[in-house]
Length: 234
Image (tube, rainbow, N blue to C red; front, side, top):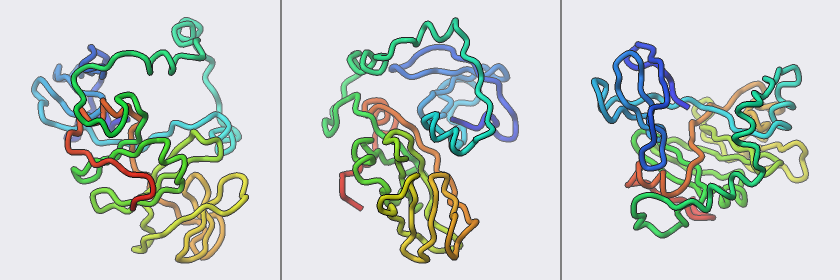
């Protein structure tokens, strides 16, 4: 997800095509073409400009409903649902060939990764590693981060674990449902939304860190210098 404003000017985007199995968007205002995965303008008057990443959610309905008990859900458009009705859609996509030649064989081309970029530094986290190690503590581009998978094993969020100048070390509270994190520095408890619900830091919030759920071949293609997280490494 990207901020639609560039240099203070709001742009209106439309899907224009596919490049290396990645969306190309064009903006009405300048006619520039923008790459989906990087947010960078690759052609037109805006070439070289980059959209600012915005923290977004890709969580299960159970997690969303718990955090938004009075939330409203849009009724599905039956014309669109028919196109994506297959329960095995992800399995079908996983079998499609990839474009280009991926010389980095550390992961399978369509291995799912969590991609984070901070201050020009990119790092990929295999989703299976995040699931096994959650909460996963690391640092990207000088930003101390934590990747957290909810109790459903699918919903994921990333946070900056700096609070009031202190870098927190977070771990999962044993047997807590829903998921509860505890920081070693103050003993405060934190929920999946990144809010301290109990302890000395109660009421404080962790800042969200934007990330992209992507395939390894796609992330590597547009972030050739990316680091790759290894399970258990910090």
